[in-house]
Image (cartoon, rainbow, N blue to C red; front, side, top):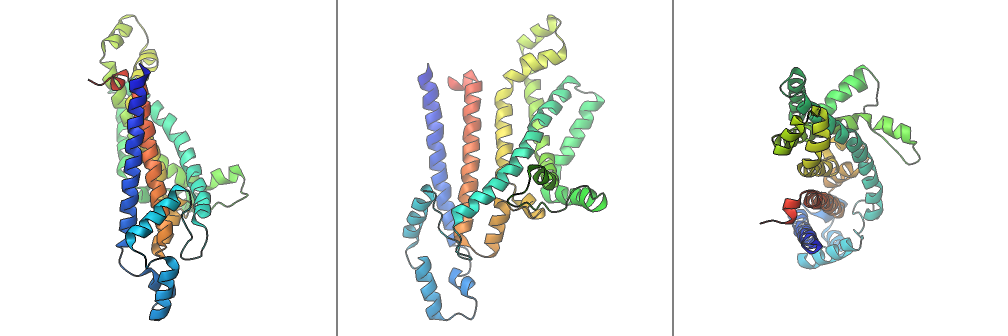
Length: 319
């Protein structure tokens, strides 16, 4: 009985590895076909041909692209992303610090948005077609319709400039206390919550409403159970599979799609690091950031897929 489940999970993991390998090829190819010359960008327009050639040899740019891709992929598998072209810093060390900051921001956004979305989704079902349901629908549609940069700048203007409740920039540093960190990330965290809570709330509402039309829910209603008890004890557990998937996708967005929010709030995370590296044409850093973002997205989708299989017996026994 357990063998088909393990086989399905193994297939999903194998697909994830193949997909990540394909993405690594796309990332490497994309960074290689960018216009401009890395050696020229490092030495400037006044560099001589000899000095440019020396830099290309030093960076290994004189080797064939397939050789450089193999060396880069081998190092990435071992956690070695090389050194930055700009400052010669170890990329893995720099990314470790930046990734920690991004995960810190994403964690607190998830802690707030996931229970809030579930609560709002249940309330929307509980008070379906009432004024509260319509207000929730309008508000969530408005928040998901606004792009991140607009929500971010709006929050900065209201709470950072006019009311002065929170700092406009989310600067954090080593040794900073947890409460000071939470205070600093209040506005970027609120921006991320506004972006994703609407999606999760509406998906929760749709999944629960789909289950509410089932026969066992009608039986529970005939027994005289309260509507809240029916939703909490019967509908929500059976709607958990699609809810887990949409939550996982939005958590992936929190890590991968946080680039715009980090740039707006000057937050020292992965997104800000990658944008700065693109501007400086620091190719190894861009490749490393792109690969890590892809890995996070694929892993979270894999987790969502496996969780959906475990939560839904029909997916474990496809016909």
